[in-house]
Image (cartoon, rainbow, N blue to C red):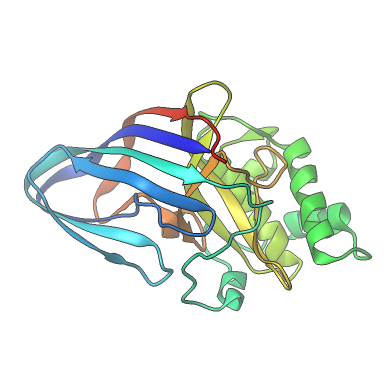
Length: 264
């Protein structure tokens, strides 16, 4: 499938910066399931860019800008060819062992309520992949995806009937780790109904014999060829599209992503 992305986000800094250094995780990588045919990142100011990778294998761009800077707008435009992969990640850069992704973080702390939920939803007499699918489906039924919801954090989000994709991904990660399954956060894009899509977040869990398997509690399913995988992290902070000191929340975001014809 051919997916095209045209995404613009404007950020406001907490105070004007005399010099700006930010880390961008906005560029997807080729793997066996997605091929990047075109991808451009544009900044609305005079900037120096240095390309590289972070410790998790994500493609990165270090951004250097001489100030004063109060706001910055990032534009992403590209085209990606994707293949059906039955929810399994193939051929991705993996510099670290799966066990690292059992680690709790401030955004994905161990939560007794979520652990109990995972145990009840997944049971204990099934294999790992079956248990994870059951947890994913149960979480989807418990807490629906709200595209424009504010981020509440795992504990508060679990108490509500709807949540943002990032909170849902965090809840699944906490649940899966409580079952002893390494799990991580993924940022990217998802083609929704029609020709429009928005940035999205989901999770991946490591299953012996399969490797990394995707789970999207926003849909209750694994990912398909309508997803573009951009960055991974222990949580949303580790996969943030823009990271650095003095950064506030996005003040404006607009996305226009079209879905092209399926490829043979």
